[in-house]
Length: 304
Ligand code: FDA
Image (cartoon, rainbow, N blue to C red; front, side, top):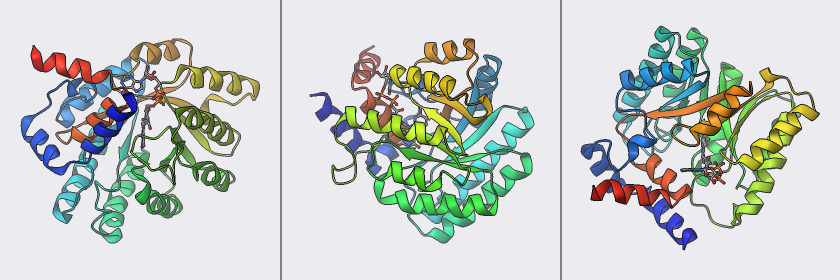
């Protein structure tokens, strides 16, 4: 039943008409639990609050699967506004972006032009930009964009999804290059031809990939709320004496805030992924799919 709900919610996440409706409707249905607000001002207030609690942030101006070049260019401007706001606030934050937000589905040239504007501005401010990973058909092109931009500018990282069969090889292939990678389990609906269907295999692959990246020359962002994996990471880090400037834990805004605070108290570096904006629908649906029990609180919110 849970598997079925997950599959339905992930299919709904891609509905363009539902997305248009949600943008008009505003931040409702409990989405406020996972989204920091609709404006950059809301988001920066939240970033400062989290920084005061000892948490670093990566800010995400929501938007994805854009098919119009003018909209992609506008979203790139919004990302640059976000960088400016981080800089002026003196916040401890990076920026996370999605390639389909910036024009990947329209053309590589549109996406690269937008990314060069964003990454060069970030570099001027001494900030990093993370390229989020989307669904499998866009994986190779996203890695190509990442490799091109890190050679041109340096201040970019990307994401590796443990549910993909290819991911361990991707990480091993980059291990001598000193790259910065966020390791996640993976949030999209993928067929068994490309991704492990069973959760236990995804979890086991996550641990292999995380260990390989922690032992590489690069920087490791351990992005999960899975306490078993977090405990395993702590033991591995201690056993291999991996210094605190080589890794950080990451979690999503609104999820396991107790665990986020616990890691701060224990002295571990931890960053929270903070999304904001009006294009919250797809992001929200993926959060519901990760834990179909979350649908209960949405229904309670509607009934009240
Ligand atoms: P798992 O799903 O096993 O959950 C472990 C525990 O965490 C659960 O038992 C529950 O307690 C809690 N939990 C997890 N999700 C929850 C939810 N939605 N609501 C309430 N509790 C929840 N994916 C991707 O494909 N591309 C990307 O670029 C990113 N980027 C990214 C950044 C960061 C900072 C994080 C933390 C995650 C991502 N993800 C992602 C999402 C990732 O792929 C994955 O879907 C989620 O992190 C959930 O998986 P967990 O690792 O938490 O494990």
